[in-house]
Length: 380
View 1 (spheres, rainbow, N blue to C red):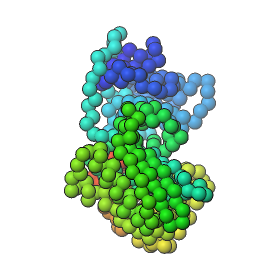
View 2 (cartoon, rainbow, N blue to C red):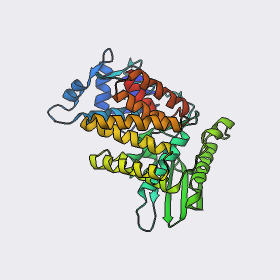
View 3 (cartoon, rainbow, N blue to C red):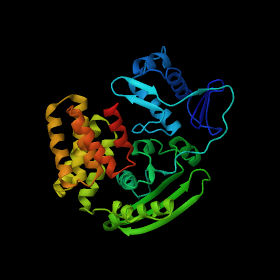
């Protein structure tokens, strides 16, 4: 049995325990964790893990990436500030924590983290035609981006939270994401009317900490998102500082530009060739409505950069470079503009400049898991 921090890995029972409580996770996750701990004196290459854990089974590298993500989730570890699993860029992974080999369970230990943790799930679409998923996902993503600007909160990334959109067991969901609270809700959009319900849930008790229903005009969406974010943060933290209140202020834009921007983000998240092509089109339409809409430039840069990564077309990288520069020029106060700029600079192999942009993104949104992950890849 291995003991590290508040965890115990007991491969005799195929259990990972945290303060004596079993952390539910897949056997392969435990195997990868055990393999890394056993070889913690060195970096374990990706190929070695694939050959050892998936022996006699042909899988792609994405299977390993997913499993490492699940290991980190189980350990409540951050790729940007790793306590247990460190990514060594271009080589592999290493377990970096202090380990004690033991034959007896460790006594429960208090959690070291004092930051409040929350996951924002995609909102359910209750609209008459069921055609507002882009709007529902966009609302949740905007709330994630807003809440990550608050130092005192640890906010789960969009990708991690949206992976579990169909999981109805709130306690299991909280355990998988390593959070104490979940914000979930629903949207009914009918013409220009919005009916939105939000619920902040304690994952340990399953009880609602706070809930509210809103009946507003579509034109109120930006003020409404700000109000939901502020109420959520206030319930979790008790009081909001002036700095935090300023951090969550929204910047209204044209609604038509905003709608196409949300559609672009939904297509971008699909990570398919067709989805990327559609995303580029949606962001370009958003910019036709509002040529100074920085988030649309950031989304366009990300979509172009991702497409370049797939086909190597240097012209696309040039367009991504221009779009990311414009995003930063228009909104240097937004983390997402520096995130996209860092992404493009990394693809151009300007790693020092890319790190600087990602550091700025983190200074604006300290809870940004995406910024932490990209910075960790660069710094290895």
